[in-house]
Amino acid sequence: MVKIQTKLPDEKKTKKTKKSKKGKPKKRIGLTIVVVLAILFIFALAFGYWFYRMVMTPNVKTADGNDAVVFIHTGSDYEQAKNALFEAGIIVNKKSFEWVAKKKEYPDHVKPGRYVIKDGTNNNRLVNMLRGGMQSPVMVTFNNIRNIDQLAGRISKQIEADSASIASLLHNKEYIKGLGFNTYTIPALFIPNTYEFYWDTDAQEFVYRMQQEYDKFWNDERLAKAKKLDMTPTEVSTLASIVCKESNKTDEMPRIAGVYLNRLKSNWLLQADPTLIFALNDFDIKRVLNVHKEVESPYNTYKYAGLPPGPICIPSLVAINSVLDAEKHNHFYFCAKEDFSGYHNFAKTLTEHNRNAAKYQQALNKRGIK
Image 1 (tube, rainbow, N blue to C red):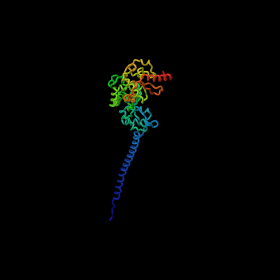
Image 2: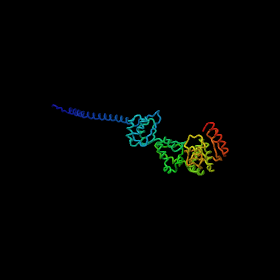
Image 3: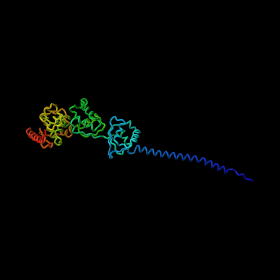
Image 4: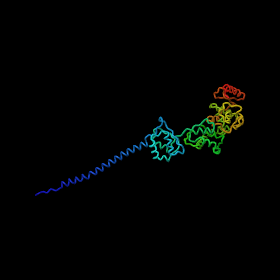
C-alpha cells in the first residue's frame, strides 16, 4: 500500500512565512515611533534649554559689578522704558529681553520709578521688577534752606517733581491757606530731616507727606512747651530761624534763644541782624551797618516790635528745640566774639554789651571786613 504524503509540512512553513511577513511592518512602525519620540525629546530639550537661556540666564551686566540705577519717568510707554534700559548699557541680549517682556505683557504695564538693578539679574526677574513697579526708595534730605524756592530746587534734585511745580504749589495762596499757612509762614511747614520717598513722587504728594511729618513732629510734648512760652508752632519756628542764622554752634543756640525770649517778654525790639539781611535779600552781607537798619520791611526787627511775619529760613531741628528748651538767664545782649570762633559774648547790661561790641568792631577793622 502506497502512502501519499500530504503538504502539511509545507503548509506549516507557509504559515510561518506569513507570520514572518506580517511581523516586519510592525517592527518598522515601532522603530519609527521611537525615532520620532527621540527627535521630539531632543527638540523639547533644545527648546527647554533655549527657553531657560532666554528667561533665566543672567542678562544684566553692570559697570564693575555695582548696582545700576535706571529711571523710568511718569507717562513713559514701553519704547521709552526699554530705551532707558538700553541706554544705561546694562542689557546684554536685547532681543531676549524684548521677547520675555512681551511674553509677560510688560508693554501694557509700564510703571514709573527709580529701579536699582543688580549685576547678573535675569530677564524673568528684571521684567517682574519693572512690571510690578518694584522700585527702590530714595532718601530725601534737606537742611540749611533759605527760602521756598531754594527748597524746591533742592527737592527736585532728589525726586521726579521739578522745582517749578513745587515752587508754584507753595506760592499758591489758596493752596497753602488750606494747609493752615500763608506766604510768610509756609517755611514753618518743613521740618529738616531725612525722609524716605519713592522717586516718582509729585509736588502735591511731597507737600502732603511734609504736612504729615509736621503733625508728627508737633506732638503733645512740643505743643505743651510752645504753649508755656505763649507761642504757636509757627512762632517757635520763626524765632528758631533767627537763632539758626545767628549761630552755627548748636551748644550755644539755647542761650541765644533765651536772649530773644527775654526781649520779647520785656517788649523790646528784637534787633536781630539776620532779619535785615533777609529783608534786603542780600545774603553776601558780612557786616550789618546802620544804613541797613533803615530798610522798610516787616522783617526789619530794628523798626518793628515782636517777631517778623514768618521764618527767615527753614530752621533746623536743633534750633527749634533750642527755642522750646531755651536757657533761662538774665542776658539781653550778645555779640560775636572777637576771636572769630563763631561763639558769642553775652551781656546783661548795655554798658557791658558796648564793651563787647567795641572789641568785635576792632577785630573787624583789623581784618578789613566792611
